[in-house]
Length: 114
Ligand code: 5GP
Ligand code: ZN
Image (spheres, rainbow, N blue to C red):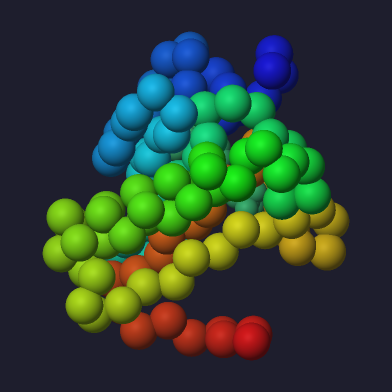
């Protein structure tokens, strides 16, 4: 999608600090980290938010969580724990309208909402 920041990152038009990439999924470090570990995992194809996930995307979403699991293991923070967040829409505080999953960790996280 033309005006989408994350599509531009996928296309290499905006540089990013990549953590993982395959043909469907990209993971990169958040530009404004909220914690010592803050990685964003996105589908390469433009899906606006959780609301726009289609049933045919279920494999892709499952693969995203497998990537999250592998990143946590490979980067050595799986055992200490972390949080995965996907903000959706206005009340969710979503700023970038391209589906993404924040992996946040590296410290004991506060402000637990649920
Ligand atoms: P949201 O608020 O939509 O859930 O999260 C968007 C996240 O994307 C924010 O944490 C923000 O720091 C990050 N972000 C926005 N623009 C860029 C960018 O150009 N590069 C990277 N690496 N992260 C970005
Ligand atoms: Zn996009």
